[in-house]
Length: 252
Image (cartoon, rainbow, N blue to C red; front, side, top):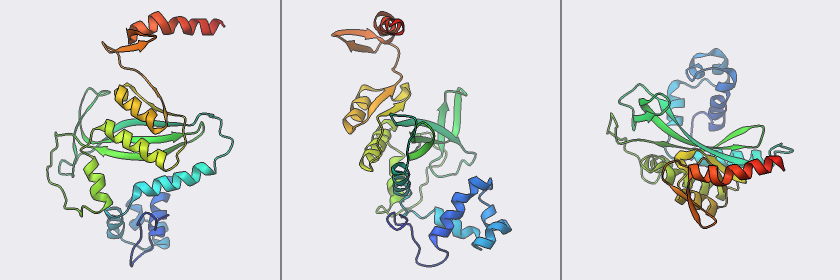
């Protein structure tokens, strides 16, 4: 899988060993610096800090493809999971940072804290089977309010340049691209679940056309939804139609 994703080196420590040690870190509850300071890790691989930094900063590596290939193998081995309809879950979160000179770091409004936070906004797509949650895809979004406008020069033929280019896209477009990639890699799910921020009619329609059903919270306000030829606001759709059906269904 590493070779399929272009993750290999001409010399030095093998990529399989380097990656294995990085994956091991959260399981043993160690930080990144342990790789070159802790004796237990240095006995397995006596690589220094620069080795790991160069490995992570290599723009030609296709990390996204590696995750999709890895997840596809896991899903094919899953058996007897309780959730009959597997779901994809999409959500965004802010990853706070303190370094104002970091590339593409910007201010984002946090609705929970009701204020702007310096960091990266991460859109994530995950797969849930009723027992476990697996990461599927992730994209970073930056706002126009950036503290540092400088960008590192990257070869435009590499995966790193493609990933950096997408940070300027709208999050709705990012999500559709993720769903399309997920479908093309054979990630089977009955629905994609997201909150009201993504509940635009165009996005819902595109997601359905890709092949996934949609479960989401609809937007309130003056937006009208057509039901049996009549237009209802979300509040009236509930009070005049859905609430009565829900009560009848419970009694039945």
